[in-house]
Image 1 (cartoon, rainbow, N blue to C red):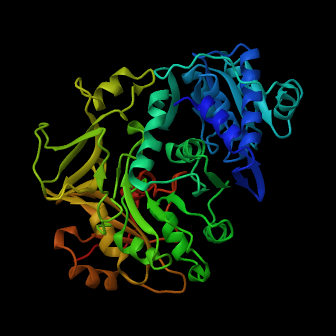
Image 2 (cartoon, rainbow, N blue to C red; image 1 turned 90 degrees about the horizontal axis):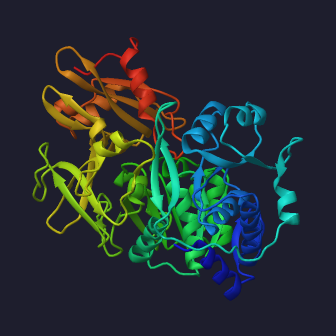
Length: 513
């Protein structure tokens, strides 16, 4: 993707069209181009070249969008950092990625001086907002720099992104994607959804440091469409923004749908403008999505699948299908197979490991060759870590994650199946199921339950409810009622925290008999 040419094209053909709406401030495509090119030219004047890394440590604000577009406009490598990272993590990722320039917004418990002192390869720090003496100020750059088109040759095979998806301190996992990979998400959105410049996207709290957030930016400049930007997800403001700005498309994770449906006034908003509502990032609950669909019956409610490692999205439910429990069918440029433990291809309705291959698959993990070899085969197949199956019509279904499989006395149990059944109980707001150690069976399921506000629910009631819906060995042996579930930055339930708690919590309620 030649981002520089796309920005120039939109600023020439539709200069006054709104590119971004943020806190009721409208930024046109012309303004977006001017500021992006000013920053890009500052990069060049500062000696930043095509092979250099530029890290961005900002929340979801317009300055983050400009930083991304400016980096792509000179063909450098972007390192987007989650704004929730600690100072130690920022230092670790900046050093690991060999970043030369950092764009940062000050916040508590972040010392610019400490970052500069400990990141020896870092040449410059640009501060957005209030700055400190000795640092370059964002506003000063935009006042003084030229908005002429940056004169840099474009190379589609150059490294565009290092996206840190997970990893403990000192062992980051940076997904490497080239400029060619940037085309894949918008090609997929166009292939599956048929979007246009008339669409209005709502980006609500999906961090730009994650591919799901970056896809909004890429789609905006690809289509010349408008993006409504929310720095944080608020279910009430989310619905207000759909109504106020006549939003046509958004993609959010299942827990965000849960938060919306937990509002007392959730059915009081006009959502008639919606064309598509997409769920991504975690196994979804068909029961939950069907309930949301009642708010916008004219919209297409779509499930999908993809990973940072595959330039998501890669698989989306066809518009004419009502199989909301399915993630749909894969784009034609992606190969897919379900395999057993030995890597042998399985047939329809057989459950196994999901492997994919094609244009969207990453180059590898940055400076992690051994980890790359663990997930990428020599002939290009990516081991996704998902357990899946496909039916007679070629529709795919995610059964669970390999790491979430619970072995109960030799029987394979997948937490999403249990969670979906518990979700159908009218008093349940949220649920997460993990496996915990058991001397007799090896592992047994444990469920963490959030009850709807003002409702009451006992373990005995749930046990009776599930006996009619699940095989005995799939019913959780432990139930724990909690006020909320821990979430990651993208809104997924953080099962790592639950597993740490679940294995040493001796005061869990008694197990199911």
